[in-house]
Amino acid sequence: MLRALELAATPGVPLGPNPRVGCVLLADDGSTIAEGHHRGAGTAHAEADALARAGGRARGATAVVTLEPCAHTGRTGPCAVALREAGVRRVVFAQADPNPVAAGGAQVLREAGIDVEQGLLEVQARELNRVWTFAQEHGRPFVTWKFATTLDGRSAAADGTSRWVSSRAARLDTHRLRALADTMLVGTGTVLVDDPALTVRDEHDRPLPHQPLRAVMGERDLPADRRVLDDAAETVHLRTRDPREALAALRERERQHVFLEGGPTLAAAFLTAGLVDEVVAYVAPMLLGAGLAAVGDLGITTIAAAFRPGVTDITVLDGIDGEQPNVRLTLVPSTTTTGAS
Image (cartoon, rainbow, N blue to C red):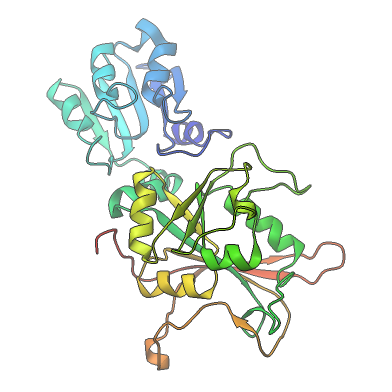
């Protein structure tokens, strides 16, 4: 199963609506017959990839898969049926499929008399596909809220300037995290005031070949000269102020992971709705004393009601070219809200 997980994590697979999956076909003596992994939506699933490489040698084999073989016909055929028809005698998978449309492969296999075992290295498999799993289980995309702040919680000075609160190292790290999401979301206010490009770039400021969807949320019109409307990446304007409606629209587009980079008003809207699943905060050794707060009014009037996410990681980002280090905090809220109102 460790090898199957390695295959599932093969670099270079583009982000998309499908999970990362790896498969290893084993002979009775434990030797490897064939390996396979999924390469993105519309391509062969991991099981089909391995079976194609194995040919007739798959008969009587054990299939070790990171995710329960699917039982439905989508862009490709059902993997459970392919394993059955190939004559596989045993299937071991790590994680049950949380997608109600695709689940049921284990039952198909058992009804065919195939020995099925599940749960081996399930924790590792879920972590590999944590965002996809979350989206299936909660009916909405996973939301990461990222912001940069001074020591006194300011994201911009009193005159509105914010370049740069965070260090170059923090900004490069932000691009790394952006590349892990399939959608970047800001409000119309951020587009009108800051005119961000909302693209993912490398250390030389060159755009990466695969760009997340740029989503702008709000009812105000966007001037045609805004950078988010250029051809560097796809952009969608979600004409709503309701975070749930915005996430539902993105879910319809098969989006799994939203990287929220809006201003304090948008951040407050998602926080009060319980729709922030991860917080990434970059803290710079800087004091302003006044200026724009990183988050707007949450309706909290007492310490007892404070928003208290749990810290999962603290990383010091060393300065580049003489800059002071910044600190990246990663936090997870204690509660999660589903896509339902």
